[in-house]
Amino acid sequence: MASIFQFSLPFCILILCSFICIKASVHDYAGEHFISKGNAFVLHGGSEGLYSSSPNQNESASGDGSDSYIRFEKITFRRPKEAAKSSSGLIQAIVFEVEDREMIGGSAYGGQRAVCCTSDLAKLGACKQGEVILRPSTKNPNWPQVFGVSFNGDDLVATLEPKYIRITRTGMYNLYFIHCDPKLQGLVIEGKTIWKNPTGYLPGRMAPLMNFYGFMSLAFLILGIFWFSQYARFWTEVLQLQNCISLVIALGLFETASWYFEYAVFNKTGIRPTGFTVCAVTLGTVKRTIARIIILIVSMGYGVVRPTLGGLTLKVIMLGGTFFLATEVLELVENVGTVSDLSGQARIFLVLPVAILDAFFIIWIFTSLSTTLNKLQARRMMAKLDIYRKFTNSLAVAVIVSVGWICYELYFKSNDVYNERWQSAWIIPAFWQVLSFSVLCVICALWAPSQNAMRYAYSDEGVEEFDNEDTLTLIKPSQAPSMDVLNTGEARQEQSNEASNGDLEEDKRE
Image (cartoon, rainbow, N blue to C red):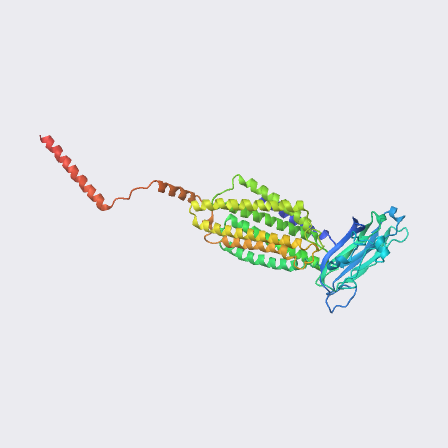
């Protein structure tokens, strides 16, 4: 455990010191290629939950104050030389609210649905061949917003006019760049789009998390003040386990503070500081790894019924190290550079290892707790037995709640394919932070530094008492005789001695 922390701390410091040099635009396009989807070629430009602009905000292109907008800046399309000889194809940018997704595309005579207008649809007058099929929204006739650009002559580059779209209705907005010309094979896009909410550049799905991590930082600070005040008061009675708990509290405070400042910088500047993100992810991964290792070794009775872990030390370190690596990779993929308001897109081969390792931790923890409780019961260490029972019950409740929340999370994601419930999606990651903090509070309450803390530490007295009790049970000594009995016995002994002496004297006379 110590080796993992010693490796991670310098890494976090290095990343934190270098975050100024790392930049990540809100939605930056750097030579990205279009992907074939049906009869269209599509590039996803971004998805964000946007709140409506303030009613008293006049429409303008400045984007100041409480205005909510999407702004296109320096968007250029570059085609290869081969395509310049045979095509001047149209590239369209389409912005739509997720509820209007059915307004894009169509089919002729109930056939296969297409994004680009086909010859059959063109004959019906439903659309213009070579363009995207669109119908106006039933709620807002001016949406979806569509505009485009074509190549002039043999030009290799086409530049999209700067565009400013003011958001007047709260919703999940999507941007796609689409063209319908197969001859534009190899087309790439460069430039960026800036998305802004009334309160800042932070995407709507992430916006509540900034305030949440602010409250969590305050909660860790209050817990830390309580814990370290007790720590300083009874520092002579501090156990090694309490030192590990102090480390977890400190890591939790730094992690939540890092997330808060990461979101605050992103919200203020529109640029997500990758260094802060990596640091927050790494601190969180280190905290979760150390917390699981602490719970595991406490469940094994380390420092309570056994002085060392013996041959299990290497296995615990290997499990912790594997969990750290798997979780770090998963969290980096999920968070670093993520600016769109989409649910987690990590591949299944990144999620499965973390889930399997978590399950292994849980099984090992409860198996070890069962063994430890039996030992404490057998040795009649009632004070330690009581605290371990409370610890076991708390972990059991946490596991049951976790399983229930996982089921709800699966239900939530399966019924929110298009992220229509983006305004409440922040609750899912926030719950895990609250649950882990609650378990930490329970552990702090059970093992808080006090003047009697050493009674929970390991000592050989329990083993000796246990052996002595077995011995006393098997060998039952007789009760000590009373003084009257002793006096009577002594008198009889004297009388018998006198009698025997008298017999000897008579024998001599004879």
